[in-house]
Length: 306
Image 1 (cartoon, rainbow, N blue to C red):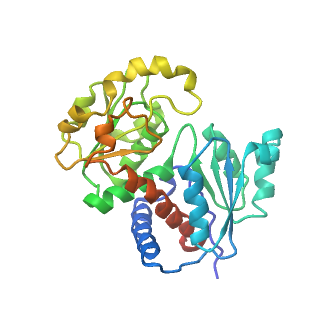
Image 2: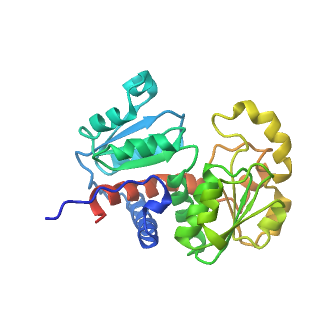
């Protein structure tokens, strides 16, 4: 039997478009199994190490519950629990941990940290969030759109707000899932040029949020100040005030447009309560789908991928 090729998931671009669509299909199947009470444990006796340098609710619970449902086990590691927090080289930690576990999920600040870990790991490494990308959230967002509206290919998506890690992941999603992305952000808060340029004509940056939202099938946003930017909150609140996703902005989108937010949300800042709690919001479906999409990803990396 041929040895399984080591695969990592550091950005959405680590899976081919056909593989990404297959992941969403599989996530739907796994979701149906949970709801029907079907036991499915392909990861029995497998262990996932979860390294958290950033706080988390959804990422920790979804990966930990997901491993349990798949028959495996998850180990939570914070900087207080590991030698990483005391200055051990990332390369050394990767070499040691990957001899003991079957996969590693890392949620940290610098994307380079995840890349260095993966380069020295013998097992699959999953990016649970970095300052540059949040690919697991995009799997959940795409699963949600596919469930509620069908294939997103050829559709228009509006990203409103900061050109941050979520914006970068939406740019990559436009490439993988073949949709048009309009990004509305204040000057000086654009997504990184290399990520944007690589997407070509699929993506464009605008300054007017309502122009970006015009005719959009999906409107997405995120907080104005991410973790590590708390000191900029007051300054950013003034700059981003015109970029709140409110009822007026949603009225510019297609009548059946969905609204998504990766959470946690600040009602009255980046999104109006009437939008996130309104009938167009699919936020809670997407939050649940973190569980199912990540289970499909774990199964793919450890069992199903070539």
